[in-house]
Image (cartoon, rainbow, N blue to C red; front, side, top):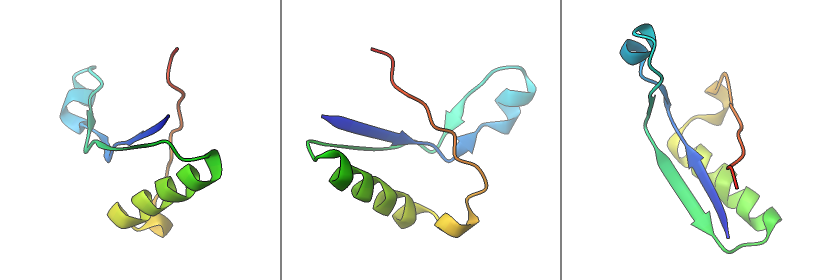
Length: 64
C-alpha cells in the first residue's frame, strides 16, 4: 500500500507564535505499483493546484 499526503502550506499565525501547523490536507492511497501511483499522485497535485505555480515542494518519508 502506498499513501500520499499533501498540504497547502503552513498556518502563518501559528508559525509566528513558534508553533508549526499545516493546513489544507489532501490524501491519496492505493495498491498501485510505484509508477502508476506516482502518476496518480502527480494528477492529484495538478487537479488541486497549478503545478507551474508551485514554488516549493517539501518531501518527507513516513516513519516506520
